[in-house]
Length: 275
Image (cartoon, rainbow, N blue to C red):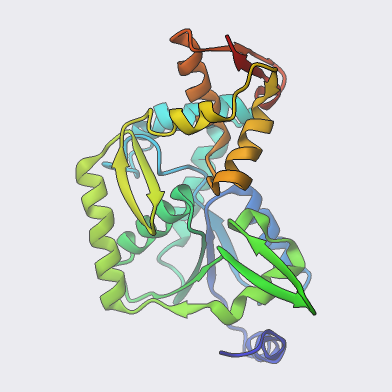
């Protein structure tokens, strides 16, 4: 494996010969950080696009038909106050740029949302001559003597750290691409309400699949939804889209199992407790 320091030399060569490629990620937040990494010289000059959506949720039978995603993306937009126009813009930008580069690099992680996005991109590029490379961001990196940093998803990576992940970049062979695309096709045919990442793979489940583990972190004392989500990540190694967690808490509360006090300004500051 090439040491990350040697990538500085490789990056300079790429800049000299004018190599341009496309970075693909799965949130606006990661897109912005990648663009900063490019501007600051940590990555080579390249385009960057994102799928602004959590494809582990809702209808995936025909994602290019944006209206099929409305019910799922509505959860995300309402909680994070993101306009529907922004979703449409990012999707349009993604589809316009996907096939016009000779090379794409997919930045993903072993979370349901990002791995679904990864499979979807591979499925789209199955019969394309585009060279596909990928970096799994779910890993622990050594930062010094007895110092390590763990990253659960691409969102955990700061601007100057992206270069440290380049040694883990792999070329996805056409055989592997086809195999992974078949997994996505199976999920598309099932077209369930929820896809979960567990034991190194994705599978279709019912919408209430996570309810029991969410309830595990709701106590008699009032807690914010942000606190519950933090426990899910650090104690269960479970990263879920915020809008989805808020929605599931609302559903659990509607059954009279827990108390939920909404915060109209910041949904993550809503309060939950046992009845």
